[in-house]
Length: 102
Image 1 (cartoon, rainbow, N blue to C red):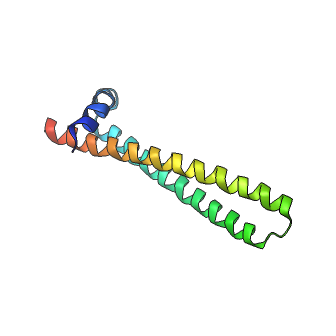
Image 2 (image 1 turned 180 degrees about the vertical axis):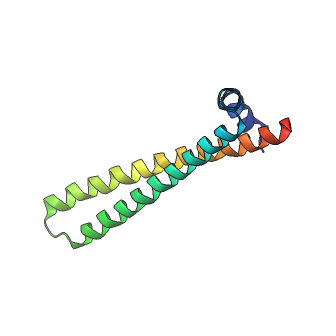
């Protein structure tokens, strides 16, 4: 574990454990991961569907509009993937924190 990443999440983790307890903090962080993965999966399906519809569209105005929609959704997907990385880092740091306390 990179110490810089650990320090970034340390205070949040410490406060969560203090306020919620280890079990509830663990459950919260796992749920956060599950929800984010579910959202990413749904958005990927949406992007794939938009791209599929884009290949079937012949009207140039509709096509342009759909290209913008695809770009917007891909940007959102990139943002969600960044958030997932942060959530994953936080969960890994949480596990390290709990192990160090034991």
